[in-house]
Picture 1 (spheres, rainbow, N blue to C red):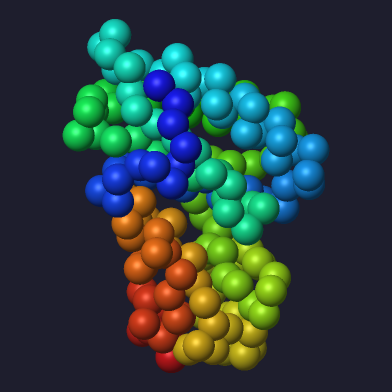
Picture 2 (cartoon, rainbow, N blue to C red):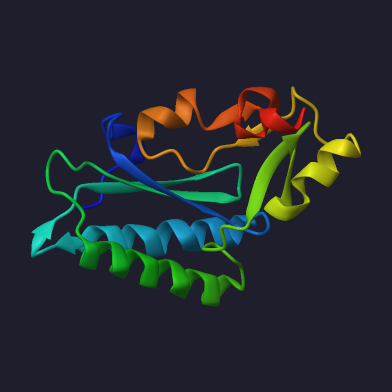
Length: 160
């Protein structure tokens, strides 16, 4: 069952899908429409999942499910990944790649390969104060507290 993202509890489980580029206005509308349709019918073992979604920074699609109502199962998670793959194909974007880290520099979000991070830091593109997106968070509440972190307080601190 689809519900507004903001109505979900802070302990709701989330999945963050980072795009390789920003979505334009038409793409955001399409994503919202298709995601609402998918989440309306999303189930685990025949039971409706209470779920919502939101697009952040025009580049991240986040899906959340209140597992206090019903837990997402392996099969339901597989269905959501299939849905995300369909979005990737429709929009010609990458949402499932996990080899890039998103950094906010001023108002821009830049993506860097994990393998290039030491080099990027040594070149001065990223400082200890640069904001890094921690896409490993797992709850809606962590979006506000732990999603954006200064690089010097994140897992990158070992490189400074």
